[in-house]
Length: 242
Image (cartoon, rainbow, N blue to C red; front, side, top):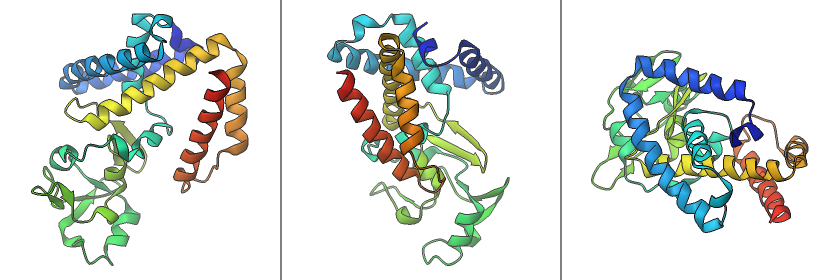
């Protein structure tokens, strides 16, 4: 399978097995993911056809990579969460997500905010959450805007990745959210094109790892700088292999 050019089969299967265990606890997720992945498949197929790469990828490989991209989470996924151009500003996440998780650091900051009433925040797991959600109390339905946009929690900034607590993250594959669909489309396209490049040139992955090791900032609070570097490296590699 094409995905094995980039990931070991043992890891791929472990991701799929974890998903199967999750489905047992949340049966509705399977039907939602089925609809979601069909929508992603149409977009991915269209992009591959336009780029002339569709002939190089078997249907079963596309489907496996899309499924993997829909359920596998890595820090690299946060890069997509910074792509604000994916978001259609429809307000779906503001109206339907629960809980809206707030970290300890964010809560301390809200104590001195003139926009957030801490009395409307209650303890939740290792952090806090807004008392009112679905819709969020800070969502202005008429304008589809957030009245604390500049101070919104990380969970809102990172959607469609949900922060459940300080150390637990989960992706939300909801077909109503065009942002979530485009998020996985781009992940899948990246996986496919990278696998094809490795297949054609075994040294491609080594070169990529070397460039990342030497150029990517490592500090946790420097994600935006890492994103810029990732994009620069991707552009260099793409131009080399065009």
